[in-house]
Length: 165
Image (tube, rainbow, N blue to C red; front, side, top):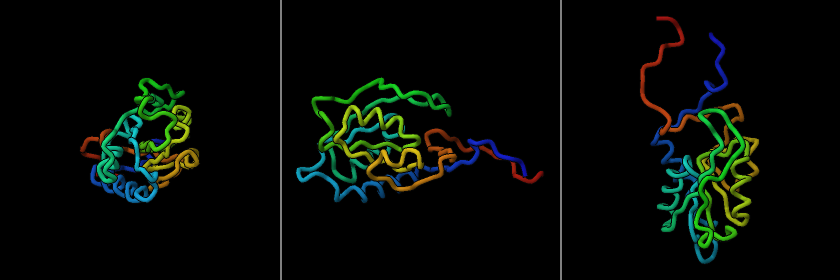
């Protein structure tokens, strides 16, 4: 058998699985809302948008905003840069705000986001060990060397079998 490249140690997530996992995240968060409810959900774009929409629906949170942080160029991670902030009049220091992302990897993106909203609650669907302490709630932990293939990054196509034809 051939050795696999690091990105080939993959965890493939379908739309159905993402939906189930986002609902599971919402289920875990349902009892953690502040007494007066969540002020808003802030999705970390782009990966956090679909999970944030599902969590907002499940928890009946009507105000959804985004923070855009660029930290990847394809599969290469770089220093995170905020390229769009949420409505700071709405989110303030993050009190009563739920931040949602698809994945925490090294935690560098969440470090930048937490500096903007230090009192916010952070939830991700997937967590890797290096970033796990940066999130308050997550659903599934995967190894640090696993690459998660999200449904918006994939297309169905033929794949050669491992053994020759």
